[in-house]
Image (cartoon, rainbow, N blue to C red):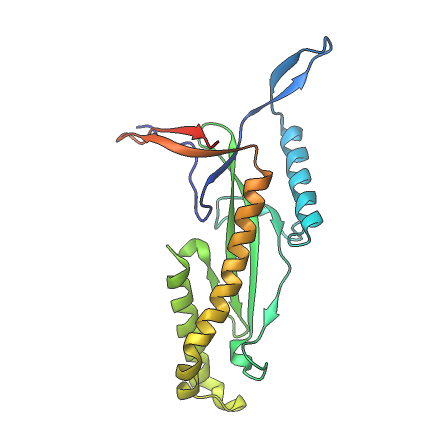
Length: 214
């Protein structure tokens, strides 16, 4: 049974690279050659530098392998802890960060994808890759906030009633932060891929055909 070459987790498009690239031989003729391992490394280094130039991403400081995304980290954002409202409600202290990954195609080439992670200071972690949409991710995030408020919210004069009054505002606050990361990741992948693809045919045996966008 066949399978599709590329699969996506969060990216809205297939931001892809082929196994070959065009260059010139000694006679000055344009030729297409296979990408060797060092060609891929040079490509990833270039993409990483592009992230640093944009001042949103940096090169990964941790292990480049990303098991959640079945790929390899290229760029990642720094931690960004913020507290909702006036800063006194420390139970809402939240970090949002994102990572750009590259994933090998099943048959050939590679595709860019990304993940967004939300952390609470009490140890809760939420990954966009574990959800079908942002709304479901935020629902679990808000449930975690409620649990923390029930547990120790009284330490900063919050209770469940306070949380319920602020719940819609907290949702807007965290959704805006998450969507900012998604928009920047989409833009970065689109601008730094070799070609954007779309599915033009998908067959019952799993075989998938792609066309270039534009």
